[in-house]
Length: 311
Image 1 (cartoon, rainbow, N blue to C red):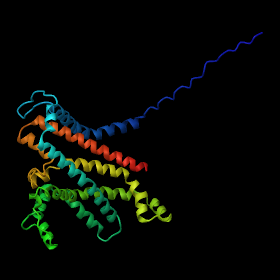
Image 2: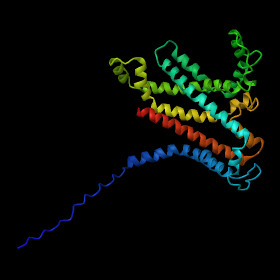
Image 3: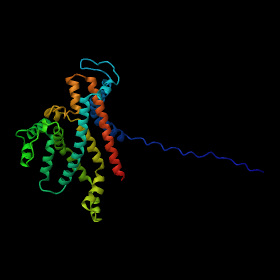
Image 4: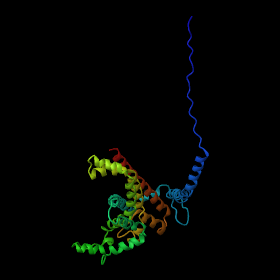
């Protein structure tokens, strides 16, 4: 007699039921959304809606008096044939490439120095941070005196070392680098405070272990401190790029985009087109292009940092 094999159905393991959130967790979630609501409302009203409107207006010939007609990508085609825009874009990129890395390096060096037990470090921290909370108009007024061609401190220092006097803000070849110095000086304190807080959060056990293994100060910094600051590097990089692309009041007060368009930057050119020439659509297209370049630079910076972490 032949035995028949009876196949049993495969056992199906039931998926574990998702745990239900209890009342306390739901209350915490509601409280979180309530606390977040003002920021979300602000972001929607003052960032999201204006951003979408700028994108729409960039495809029109809108002026202040009306919404304008749809003209497609004409504004974008005109932009890259506009000498003023190309000059402003070049100046902005130069300003960003020069100011951001130098300011980050100097602020990190200052933060490392002020993280040591040195006399009067609280006073030095305050002095470095004062320019951050000082009005840019006041900062510009001080540096206008320093850069005064006749009696400014800058030319007095040059004369002391036997160097010829400079026109500073009146010389097209020197004006933009002179404003870069101001930008680095004014933003140094904010980055220094961020780096200082990050340095104090790095585990001292790791540093002590590196010293016990015979690591030099440079090796300890490069293999322990620097990797520990990786998230902070990216945050400072993003905020610094955004800040450098938004430089406006310093240019407006000191040079007005001159001399000979040497300090004209994107924000100043956008302001001129929107509120002086009343070309809202054209200025909106400039704004969109500026945002694209900000995103590209941030992406490049993030990629370079990721490659450094993989080494």
